[in-house]
Image 1 (cartoon, rainbow, N blue to C red):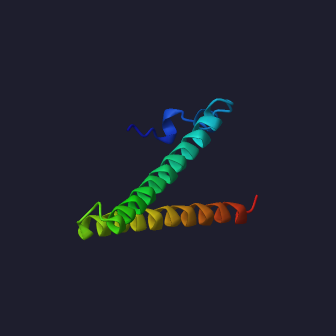
Image 2 (cartoon, rainbow, N blue to C red):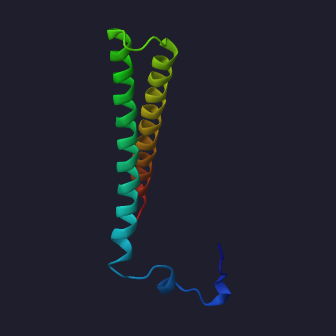
Amino acid sequence: MVIKGIESGYGIGQAFPATAKSRPASAEGFGKVIGELVATVNTSQLAADQAIQNMVTGESKGLHEVMIAMEKSTISLQFLTQVRNKAVEAYQAVMRMPV
């Protein structure tokens, strides 16, 4: 990553181009990342539910596998919650900024 100094002629117009293509791409990228994170959490929740059902019906004999699946889903949900909390805090900080 190359960081150019002020003396290199890197002005405001170059740093923040007013093109319509660049803005939706960044918002779309963030939305895509959050969507993938939610999908991953949902998949781990479904895997934990399936592991519990397999344990109850007797298809699975390993209690440790069920506990691991449950802990993975719990940790991934806690991570998603913290990401959401940080995003809300950042939004609120931006909204408090004077214009």
